[in-house]
Length: 78
Image (cartoon, rainbow, N blue to C red):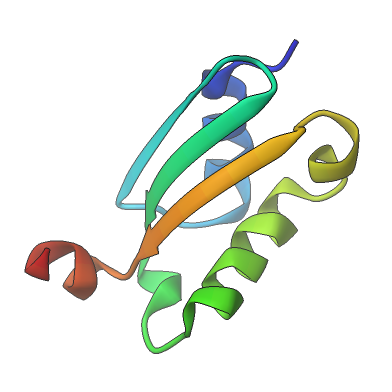
C-alpha cells in the first residue's frame, strides 16, 4: 500500500515545491502542491507536470489523485 509520505517524496524528486501536502487512505489521495514551475501555466499543464514527476506510479501504485496546484503567487493570493 502506498503512503502519502511516499507520494510526497516522488513529487519532490521530480518537481521543485515550496509547499506540498498529501493526504489519503492508501488508494485515494489528495494533494496541495505549490511550485514555481507552475507559474504561467494553466491547470492542465500544471497537473501534467505532477503526473510526469510521478511517472508510471500513477498507473501502477496510485489509484486516484486529486490535486490542487498553485504557483507561489497564486498561493499567496488565496
